[in-house]
Image 1 (cartoon, rainbow, N blue to C red):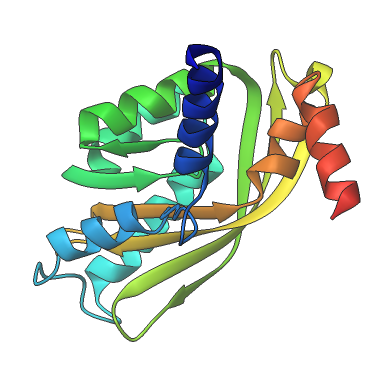
Image 2 (cartoon, helix red, strand yellow; image 1 turned 180 degrees about the vertical axis):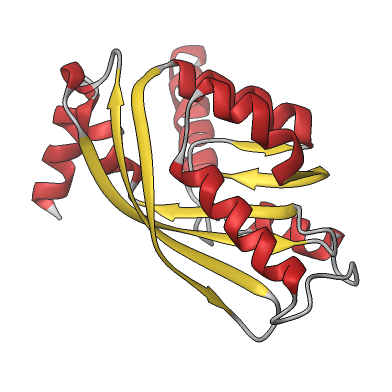
Length: 193
């Protein structure tokens, strides 16, 4: 009897934990929604103002020159003290954490350039920076230039500092497909889809 009880109990445990009435939910939108809620009611930039023009130019310039030196010099003034940042690879909150991450990223690259193609302002005060990035990593892709398009969603505060930075880009094609072994698996999955 005991011989039969243990396998049956194991089967019940496996089946019981594996059966769900509803699918598992992955909510990658939640961090952005929480950040937007946190900053709701905080004044932004007036459309057409000198402050708006300066903030757009400062952020555009920041994206176009991505070196450790430029990040150390510019990032502390670009991002608000309590800013939210998500580049699809990591999420960071607060200026010090954002600056530290950007510095580590810049140091791991041979070169990074982002050409901002255009900027659009939505009615709710959200700005969209459409760009094309070229990256040459030290350890990924064997020194090849990886070129990828993307969009950065930005919400500025009244001083023109970034409160919310949310990137939209294909990190699979832009980065992960160039990692040995992992890249082969991602390309295989894409081919099957």
